[in-house]
Length: 112
Ligand code: 5GP
Ligand code: ZN
Image 1 (cartoon, protein in one colour):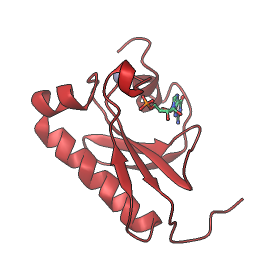
Image 2 (cartoon, helix red, strand yellow; image 1 turned 60 degrees about the vertical axis):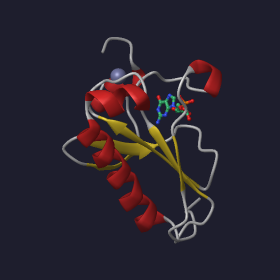
Image 3 (cartoon, rainbow, N blue to C red; image 1 turned 90 degrees about the horizontal axis):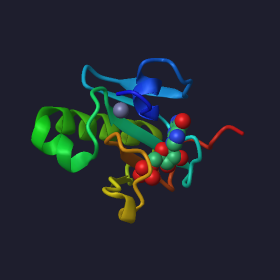
Image 4 (cartoon, rainbow, N blue to C red; image 1 turned 180 degrees about the vertical axis):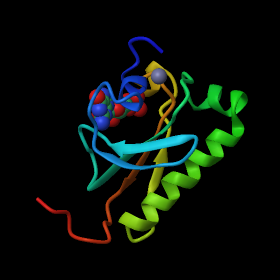
């Protein structure tokens, strides 16, 4: 979608720190991390928010949760949050569905 920052990242038009991907989803580091681990998991197709994604493409939502869980198990001790801000008043600022994978307990010390 035009003027969507995450569509531009997925298209390679804006750089990001890539983490992993599947057929349906891509993961990259949040540009301003708020926890020691802060990864965004994003469907490759544009959907406004997680509620819309759940109705339009439930398999893609399951895929996104599985990719996030895999990354969390690789990078953290296993305890993590998966957060979907939904709607501007709930803090959503990018209107392309995405989950925040955050953890305060990295498996390895974070390289500075
Ligand atoms: P929201 O507030 O919509 O739940 O989350 C949007 C997130 O996207 C924010 O945490 C913000 O830091 C991140 N973000 C915004 N623009 C970019 C960008 O260009 N690259 C990356 N990697 N993250 C971004
Ligand atoms: Zn988009």
